[in-house]
Image (tube, rainbow, N blue to C red; front, side, top):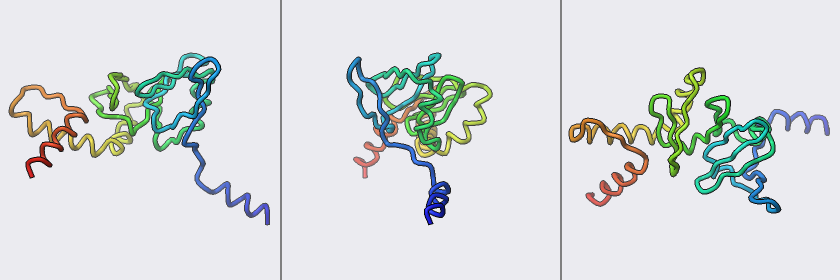
Length: 161
């Protein structure tokens, strides 16, 4: 009976915690909600975890921290970066831009095959960006539109109705 229960649990979907323990300062650890993570950056045997407001330096390598992150949400785009696909605002060529951050990360050439996987995740935002580009392209020669522009445009559309 116990063996049957154990075998059933091994077939279930892996568990990824909603929070990971990070060091905020010398003597303080906090539970960081994984939703807040924008990206991770490997630095030798250390790992930087970047959020909108903070950078946490972990003494574990990125490969160890990655085990606690849902691979359906967190994707490795080069040898030293893992990104939260829900934080992507734009993919322009090989450059990934993030919501609420000025940081841009280049996608490695051998990871370019990941773009079709990233696009459905970013899908709605990218489709809205393309609609806005098409709408405003007649007015300007070169248009750069981001997620922030989408929310402004949607507010204008709601007001006009």
